[in-house]
Amino acid sequence: MSDSDGFDLDDYLAHIGWEGERRPDAETLRGVHLAHMRGILFENLDALRRTAPSLELPDLTAKLLHSPRGGYCYEQNTLLAVALRALGFGVTLLTARVVVGTDRIESRPRTHMTLLVEVPGDPRPYLADVGFGAIGALLEPVPLALGGEFEGAGRRHRFVQVPAHRGPLELWALETYVSGAWQAQYVFTLDPFEHVDFDVINWHIATNPRSPFTQRLFVQRVTLDRHLLLHGRLLTETRVDGGVSVRELTDEGEVRRVLEEEFGIEAPEGMTLLN
Image (cartoon, rainbow, N blue to C red):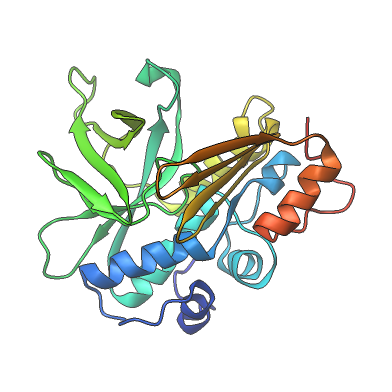
């Protein structure tokens, strides 16, 4: 896939609501990243039907920019990578192991897509990621550096390196501060991956019956004042003041209504939303 074939930068920026500068600098990178997070939903409806969504640019723009739908990490970060390159940033595609909920790093495969971004004139690379469907996700990109923490749009993150890692490359862990403690979200090395690699990973995650994305509904929406997550039947609202409310939805009909009213998503007719 060519990064420029058929891509309309004006269309993308208008959709996410970015009206700021178009310079390849850190301020623009943070602004576009945050606008994307707030402007495009995270959802896995295709994978829930065990259908691998297309990662071709015309299909991505049609779905994420011109339909009442969103997408998951491969779609979201592929689109962001194209946009950032069009703005003049350097972008390297990386893979990560999601470690939320596990004590053993090796128990999870490297299936998450994230981005390493180079800003002209800035010696520090940045980690950017608009496709992590969890409360620990980055709202703004953060410099890839040790020894400190970074605040972005109200969320706190830091990097640590994993000791005793088997392999020639350093293993980085992205951690977020939630519920009074630092929690690892995913780990990654800096070896580059290509679009063709993610074609394979995307197919595996969207069709494997053991994949979490084929088993349960995930929908995420980020606004100025709250983070809304629908995970199966559970609807969790996390407000910027730290307040959290959780509600269990009763049936398919209520799930479909919540998708339309809270997320603006029209689920395909006849689709089973609760397994």
